[in-house]
Length: 361
Ligand SMILES: Cc1cc2nc3c(=O)[nH]c(=O)nc-3n(C[C@H](O)[C@H](O)[C@H](O)COP(=O)(O)O)c2cc1C
Image 1 (spheres, rainbow, N blue to C red):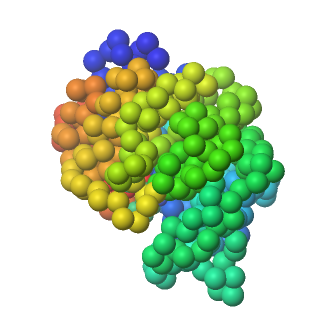
Image 2: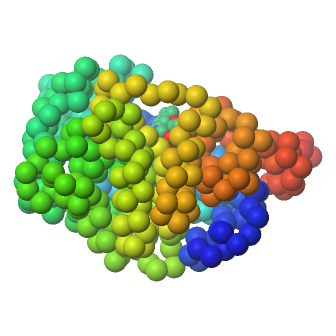
């Protein structure tokens, strides 16, 4: 960790997290492809993720991958609830590493936002007749709008089952050869629903006070860290704010980051929103960067930023000015798998292309 603060990093300087070194600070943000069958990765995921490693990213994070079938957002989401699921993912981890990137994966449970249709079919909640399934959440409060399903408030047995599902998933991720693991605690999915007072109205030890609302995430992080080896980095993505009065805020994010750091989390991936429908989000270039900076300084730990970062100079400046340690890009990578190679050129760095492409570059 010392290294992060003692050098003068820029977008194309390496970053070491435990024994793993990212060749640069550009990462592929986890992005659902909604293209799996029964949670199994296929050729689409392989080509999609391999291309972005070939394109020069330092870190490629596989999309939200469900720890249990009912934790998928849609029927097309990836899963890792059986050893069979780990097989095609192992091939993906292998190709990402072969092309010089760190192979990351985000493991997730969608909570009350599970059982949704594919986005290109409208994305609304699916009824059981349409192939949907019952959902769970901290409290029986529906998301609303096109997601009217009322989730079942989780029992303590549900809570311990979810925790063991995350631990089992982490073990499979390790067996599959990934060298970076992220827990998805953002965007109004299960962990995020526990964090926010807007979605968590429990009266037991998992609701009410800050200490109670963070308990599920902190306990699960501890259990995952116990099976995820010491030499490999662990990250957590949070929604730093709900963008809604009375919701989760950036002060709580800093306090949570300190707790997660103490549990062995190496990188806080700072997103925002997604918890309630009526949030007012001031979307603009780099609008979430201040959260990564605040958490980086407040908890004194490495952070990743994401959201409307499109320009090489903009990304480079974020790292140079110490606002974040890693810049994750989502949609830019969907437009251009070679974003890092182009950015390197624009910023005056050399990113050697794969030899097969050398004559063109
Ligand atoms: C198609 C698509 C799928 C996404 N899936 C995920 C996901 O699986 N997990 C996650 O944490 N965020 C997900 N996101 C959010 C992105 O990771 C990223 O935070 C967001 O797109 C903002 O970054 P951008 O402006 O660079 O696209 C998704 C975004 C898109 C566009």
